[in-house]
Structures are given as C-alpha cells and as structure tokens.
Image (cartoon, rainbow, N blue to C red; front, side):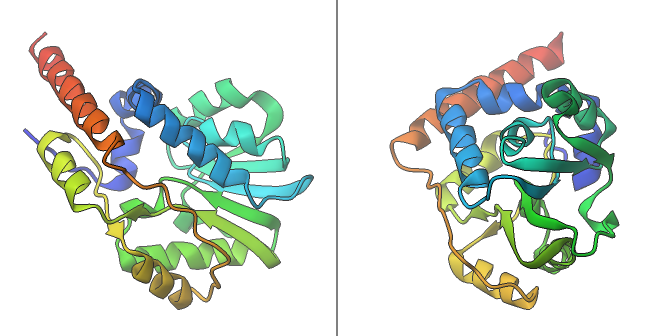
Length: 219
C-alpha cells in the first residue's frame, strides 16, 4: 500500500532517517547523482564565505560545504541532525528548524538548499525562496535544486515508490517564473538529466528496492 506523508512528518520518521543514505548511495547511478549534487553545491561558492544550508539532512552536502567557509546547517528533523553531526562533527553549526522558521536577515554570503524545494507546491516554493533571500547578504548567492519534469521517471516513481513525501516537478520555464515571483535573478542553471542510459539502472534499482521492501514487511 502506498502512503503519502507530509514533508516534515516523512523526514522525521526514524525509518526514513535510517535508510536515507543507503537508498541514495546504494546504486551506482544514485552515487553519480549525489556526487554531481556535491559538485553543483560548491560550483559558485567563494572560499572563506559564510554559508547557510537549508535542509542539511544527514550532512552529505554539509561535509563538502565546510571546505568553503563557515557553515550553519538547519533541518527540522532531530534524527537527521544527529546523523549530520556524526558525519561533520564541529565543522558546522547545526540548528533544528525548517525553512519557514528562519528569521535570518542579511547574514550569509550564500544559501544552499538541496532536495527541499521539490517537496513544496509553487506557493510554498516562492515563500521558501523569499526566506532564503532574506537570509543572504546583498548580491549574495542562493543555490537550490528542483526536480525537472520527466514523465518516464515520474511513471517509474508512481509504480514503485511507497511511503513518500509529496514531490513536485518543474520545467525550466516554471523555475524562471518562481524565482521572479520571489524577487530573485537567475545566474545559471545546471541540469542533471535522467538519461536513457541511466533510466534502466534506475528502473532495476527500484525493482530491487521494492522487492526488499515487500520482504521486510513480511518479516
């Protein structure tokens, strides 16, 4: 049975936290995507800058950000923060809060947020981007990800995904509209495409994960 959770509720579940890195790093194509994400996160960052990471999860990107300056990493999940602290140690300052709880004003050179905004509808994406805009200094930088529209990948997710938080997909035109509504100007877009070469691997990986899920549910 497929169950839908609210974003915060899903990522606060112990089951989600414990399997988070395993799911994203278990298969070859997923490891490639994660490494590309790390590359994209720091591509425009300046050394010795102040960085806010919104939705740090288990600290996978936080670890890389720490090489570029002082990092403040926030996440609404206490369990996620515990894992992030174990991974990163004292190389970042961690705070338990979500993007809509932020009250920062012109404090950071850059704001980085990966795998967060794709869980929000358009109205809340704009609201979240405005919060990030408040947090960053004048002429600062905001680096964020949104999931691109892929009907084939969406079909695969529809078949195999269980117990997931809502996920929204956006075209390049959508991103242009949302950023303008938030009062931001796009500097550049880096696209990670789900190519025809990687899609079969994704499909096979989802089948394996689905079978493991069914087996575990019977034990």
